[in-house]
Image (cartoon, rainbow, N blue to C red; front, side, top):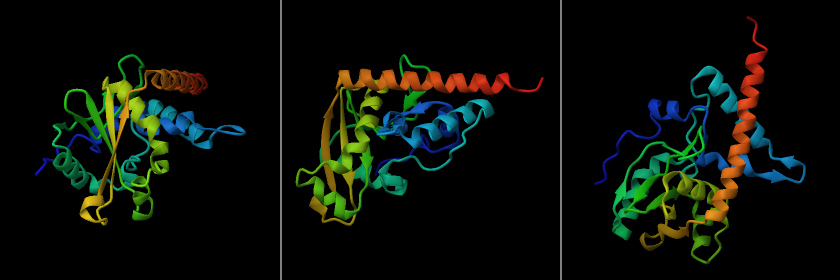
Length: 210
């Protein structure tokens, strides 16, 4: 049985992420609509500004992992280790090597050069993956690539787990190879976003009553 170290979703983990752009929220940072940036970007920016001003996390919800089914992670992780025979390592928050105030918390590191992101969909979406319809995974690709940017890993297994499916269909694995061009674009957008965060923090502080 795989041990469950208290690395992620602890108060310490939430604290170290406070004020930082994380891989699980990259899609909010980069998503545009026909009218410009999406609403989620502005909302996330304000969250990070508040966290930097207060020095503590403002959003203690579960991250968008396993579609907020964090209770399934140990079971999904054990299934992945069993079916792949890969070596896995639990980790906490990993800072980006060059971008301050950014980082990732991959579900696990795999072998010497891989990582794992686990998701859980309902059966109606899970079964589509086996037919070649990877649409359920699309929103998570930026998270995966930014995670590789932070960890230096060369590949990621993007895995869907559905415990109510038949045993042979419970786990679907999609290998994702590191794309340095995509990573560079994500890093540029994250850096620009963080400049906006810093500017707003300074703007608020400049208006403080002395």
